[in-house]
Image 1 (cartoon, rainbow, N blue to C red):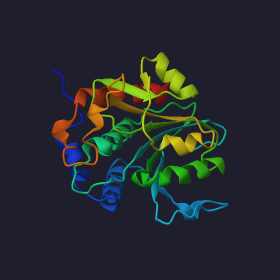
Image 2: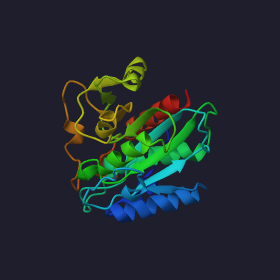
Image 3: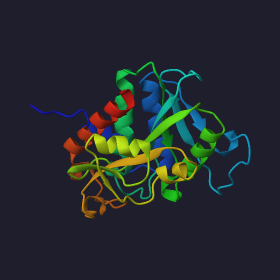
Length: 243
């Protein structure tokens, strides 16, 4: 009998919390898994600090240590929210939980560094991703092979990615992932810095954005999710990160 690990209890600690509270909950989960995390904010940039007018705190985990001689594969999801009166189950607790589940098993390849980044302020114009992009260009994470972004991954029958020029996007297409136009997300500021990054989501092909209409509303609840779709994104994430 099919049974997902992504149960209601996994979502509950993140529901109806503001961005700071969700960041605290995320830190507790990371510590519970036995990882050490670091933060990445404007103050951590070496040159030309970004003056964003808002405090931004990304959370970073170097999951299998860090070797500057290895390339780096990065997994990213934003933890901030636009509406504290929503469970924000699909946007973006589901993405957080997929990364946490991936980190749980510690089954990482030795051929590359695995870095997980939980970004802040995606809902304010992807500010956390702007900081991450500059940190990558400053060499904080070595040579980046790609950044796989998880956002809105648990409602809709099809796993989709962006239809943009990208080696990672082409690889996902070969794995059967449909390519569509996806609204602004954390991958945009990274690609603006020539960093290979695309988002994967759950949705429809053919321009049907129905699964996304409940985002930022009280209707974005656990009961509204398509958990088998979330499981498909999780399996795809493992395949891409561990290939």
